[in-house]
Length: 502
Image 1: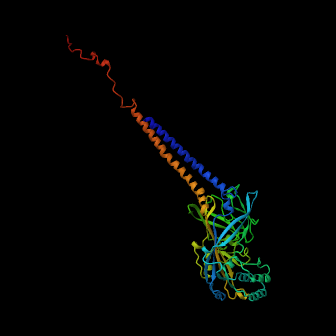
Image 2: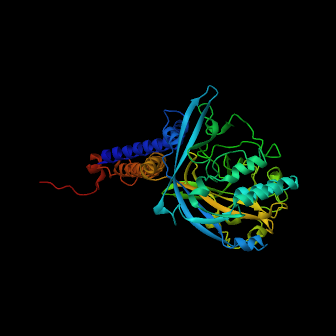
Image 3: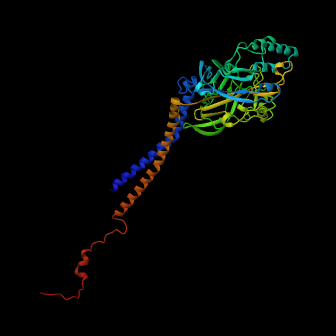
């Protein structure tokens, strides 16, 4: 029995030591293995797990457009405040794919990314054939652009516009405004003001988006330095753009806005947006989970579209009187166009109050990115921007009549997408479930080692105590020695006792 207890205690002790060693090894080696696997699979390399995801984005993206219809165009021409009504959304399925992928010797890769849009009637609140009353963007834009031109040129253009039947506001379909329409005004402007419009043919707010690319990106592959993966090396061969008035504002920072380097910190992220013609910085807001996958949420800071008075580094973007808008005329047709958050969210209240019908809110109009910090891969995102046109009365162009100066919202749009289906399942299994199993195993082994070792020690102590009690030399357990023969000899008896004779 004692031998069995001894063997059991030794077995438990060995099992406890083995569990401690296994748990310790997993604790030390597990994170290293996971980090190596992540680094291996987020590189831009045809052998990596994420390469196909990077090349042909499997996440379903949608472009949702909301138009601001002007309800009182005749009153606006008389100087009244514009009254707006939001229409939409008009939803388009967006497909992206990269072509001309070329790897270079300096750890970079170049590519062109094309986008295609397909209208989704079931997801939309209306059809593309619906008419919407909006400012005549070409006429009102050209009027402001020609404000300082000779009056005779402006009057000549105004007369030609009258012959063409052009007015300050137009009633066109959603499809025309989005994807382009033929307008004799384009030819008229090119005649009276050559070079004013950098295009010919159709005009549409999103005509350059569909079946076209966003420029030649050259980004880091991360093969030599994983912390640089996806970081933009150049765009259209440029290290900096020349749209803005300061070197800092012209910098091309961050990634192309699709993925980021792995093992992110909860601080900020940057990306270059050709649509906004600038780099943008989003800041960490909170940690969360998307379908069980841990995420960091990044949002736009209030300083994103602040003017130089409220945020000095932005002075190079826009010498604007109000915060919350950014002049993009230098990169968008030279027209007086401004971008902002939808409904002038986070903008100067004077912009909201200059029109009626806007209701800014963070929930509906704030942009966000939910990124898996271990891999730098977005799980859920919604980038929202608003396009605005500056309109006013321009002397010599009678069509502008008595319009008061106002930054008038045209439309806002959201590009949204979230990981789902088999891609999400594979992502969750490989990058969430398996690392979690390793975590549980290491702590399970370490947790088991403690009671096993303690049990072994207790059994060993009990065995020793029992053996000690059974040992002959143990105190209090010695037997009294039997009497010697000398103790029974007559010598110890009374010698005076009479002897008996026969």
